[in-house]
Length: 135
Image (cartoon, rainbow, N blue to C red; front, side, top):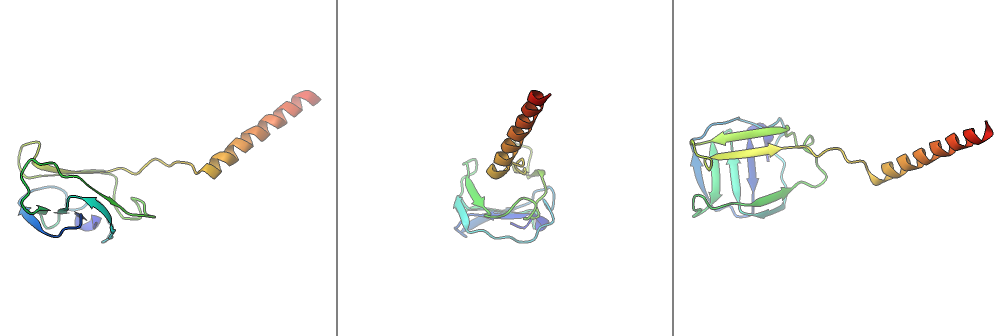
């Protein structure tokens, strides 16, 4: 993935049919090239800056493609991708577009932080109760 160049490559097979001639944003962030080997599913290559789309060789138009890629120990920010919805089109039909949606997951507190918070609430409750008894 190269956000600054608007490119994403997912999959294991390099045997692709390439297409060009569409419009849309030239990038989806400022990050450089970041590789991952944790991929599965159909191969897909999309290079916005070069206006190139690669699909598995022999792909039949309208057939669904599905794939995943995981970057371990990385965040959207560390990869240099920017939150947003990016759409590239090559015609007027609903099937003639590539949409990339980047959404950072909401901050989820770590279990240790939740335990500490719970302990703090209990302590405050204990002091409040103690104060009532001594008054």
